[in-house]
Image (cartoon, rainbow, N blue to C red; front, top):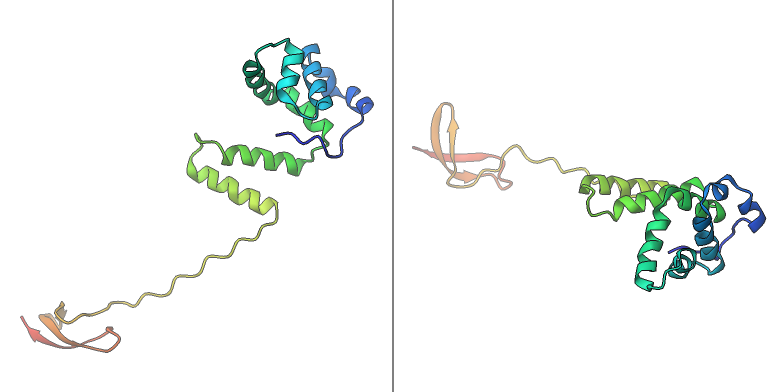
Length: 164
């Protein structure tokens, strides 16, 4: 959804821009109607392309807004900075179902970093003891196999065992 209630170029500045001049007459009419209607995409497409079917106009408006020249003109009019454009691009990656999960996760991390959101550092894993012994375990001691009968309270040592 486009937000036209924000700082933007004047009509004179916008119509003098290279981005505006690159648009075809119909696309200029679409963009200008979009601006004048505070972002009514369906109305803008209906007006620019003489569409009578609202559903067709709605779908066409989404296709028009994805065109690089139209997007560049609207972004210029709305004075979007590089950070805002990058966040939009990351949002498209994050919300795309066809993108691998690892790529989407990296996009989320990049967006958080770009926006200055701090993520907690992962907690270091606790060192695992070498081995925990249980009564009944079979172990080799001095080349002989024994069944453990007594272990230390912490389970780190087999204290006694019966030969097998």
